[in-house]
Length: 72
Image (cartoon, rainbow, N blue to C red):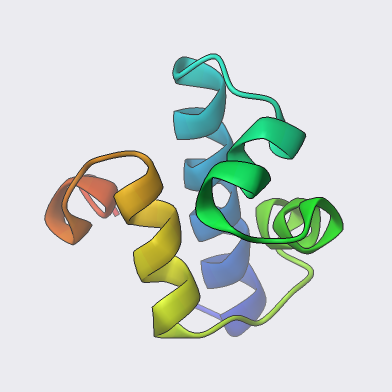
């Protein structure tokens, strides 16, 4: 899997979970302490980000990393 494809899949998963939880980008970004435009870039697969950021995102959904990556 290429880097871009991996970023796109992770971004799509974040967006899917965010929408499933009825959260706007703005509200979710505020909840987890990220800038909304930074979150938007992650969801689009346009941004590299570190494990610490992924951990904040996953904790914001109150799920485990294993649950986040189910089906990858």
